Length: 260
Image (cartoon, rainbow, N blue to C red; front, side, top):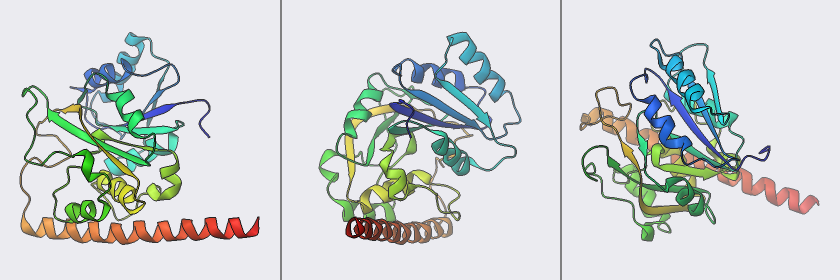
């Protein structure tokens, strides 16, 4: 049920008082009258919630929905809560400390015209378009689903939630519930679901400028070998789970069609 909402932007916040106002401003500047920004604050111990309330009041925004968790649940569960509260036909993810590039919102919606999931590129805020070492996403990769999954396994596809979105149908396709054993890389899970369903679009556009600082949830440096291997084991498990959910949903549709 969309309640007439076109697009929902989902943001999870925690200790984000320093930058969240600028991010909110960059988002609402691009929202249409039938869009919404859903913010879930993960029990921040600082002034994050107060800054959000002040910013929304200053902007006179009625399209922002703010809620808080009762306890700190981690950013993956906070994003899951935001997705569950989202009412739009299209759902986009946003970090608390980045800045959207002009034209991002409509470009991402257009990217979902024939795909369940859309993923685009990002640059580093204040570095004149510079990027991290990851090779950028290209349009021709969109249909190379198995290659994309292999690249996920070796850490060579830059799927970042802040530059991703999906259609509401993708929730039923398996995005929710996010597997309980996943405590980071929810964006990789969404990308896996899109590739397993063979319905993901890569945009070559840079749609967000990421702010790098010591509090980033995404690690900035190279991880240790043990950490990398554990993460790859989780990714393999996610691929199997996404495939299982796809088979279950396809079977359910066939049974429904046969019974009608």
